[in-house]
Length: 169
Ligand code: OFO
Image (cartoon, rainbow, N blue to C red; front, side, top):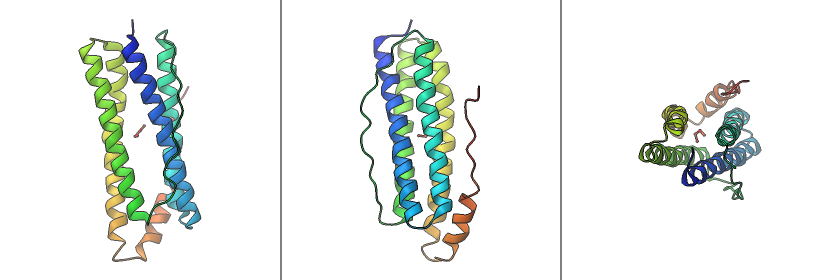
């Protein structure tokens, strides 16, 4: 039996995942408008992953017999000074999400809710990967400040990212 507190925590997390999708969509639009189509692609794939995460959490709640709470998704920031600033924000955002996920893991342990603990571990691992990827790209973008021509190579490389459904049927 899942507690009310855990239903609220997971519903809030689903909301945070959809906010992440919205934030990355705004970032993707910003990059696209600045003609960085590869960066825009990378961020759009990120949007789709975050949507998948949000829906997956809602489905988990339904599978546990809970009624998920749906709340307003706040408007994201829509512009950044440059790509360095944008990717620093990606890193900061992923670190913030890691904190949210860790709090759910803590609550699951506290409540001896093994089903939620097992469920949330996927996200604990995912965040390790997401932070590492974001940090790597942020560092590369920073390097292009002294070598502006390199941003076009990086943009091309990021254009190759393809969406892979993390939870295929
Ligand atoms: Fe939902 O994966 Fe990072 O934030």
